[in-house]
Image 1 (tube, rainbow, N blue to C red):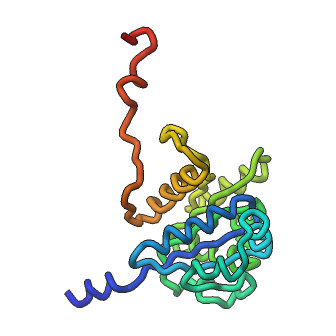
Image 2 (image 1 turned 180 degrees about the horizontal axis):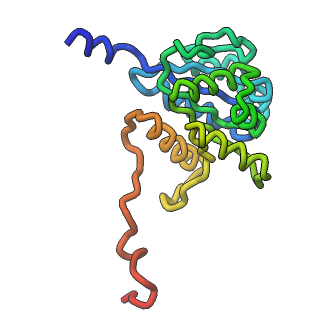
Image 3 (image 1 turned 30 degrees about the vertical axis):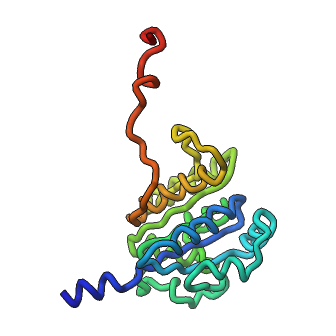
Length: 209
């Protein structure tokens, strides 16, 4: 019983990385959602280009973003805790993931803390989710996505689901991130789920009354 209580009290570490792709809001909003959850400890690392995008797209300072995380790791600190497989971690999300970061992960470069931590996720067979942001995609992008998938990573482009009839960009962002949280097996309350077509939508046009 004591061991069970201790397990519940121990926070589940989640690594959140923000790279230089457009869509910095996904990383920030993910940190906000994780902060609302009990039993979760967030570890943040941001690339140099990621910091530029946070300022360009959201007008957020470094202090404002770092305040959303429990622990912050400089992207050049490859000796950080999250760079080791001995660091117990539930999973890692790169939100957003640039094509440069994707390529480095696909080829095992481990040239900064983001790509090293991602490499650790793959070698330890832990959950790695890359919210890749680019369009259109060239053959190198597609091959790199295939390589990461073959190694056990999850390629998750933040594609909005219009079947929920979102009323704002914020709703589309939250819908994508709710799917990410599902992949991390983190419980969520009040998330809209798909329950099938309505009777009106499911009926063929010729059968309408």
